[in-house]
Length: 270
Image (cartoon, rainbow, N blue to C red; front, side, top):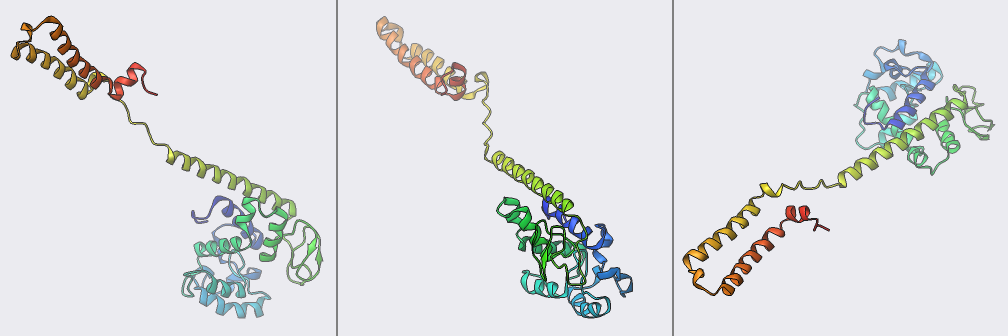
């Protein structure tokens, strides 16, 4: 299973592949209906989509069905996907990765997102899955393709070809696990989004290592020395000297106390 497939979807697709062809390993992607892949001239996964569609007409006559690959794509289904899926081309090989991609498209078309979000009930989603993959059972009595069907039967019961290959309890357990996986993925996404919104706080440098602190402190001290020396302030009245000193010290205190680190240290930060 490719890593681009969500965990819940990957879990469900593995289950579907095992139900359809009896295994979920690498070899499951090469199976054609009735396990007649040994009669092919080359493995299915080495054939292009166009080659498979051409060959499926003969497989239907020879084996009773055109179903091919790990998800048992019918000829009409592959032809429809070729028109429906953007970028899909007939010359692409039907390798495991492409089969997973196409099966995921079918899963989404049947309402996978609505099921995971809770908009579609497990019973309804199981019915939709059974319409796509004949080996899966329905979970409650309903109208099938040809007749009224009971819980545990294939949607196509009565066509003389298809029947459910897994018990309904098993499907219910897998759907429950898919929902749990979806919840974990949603939680991980929310945690990631919240973490991305957190802006780390800018570390504060200690006041003693702040260049601004020492600049203002030395400037204030130097100004005092210069004033006393050059302006001959000592000759002034002591009250004038005190006023000038208060102004100089006041500016220095204001400048230093406005520093974030100092405000934090003094408990002034709101």
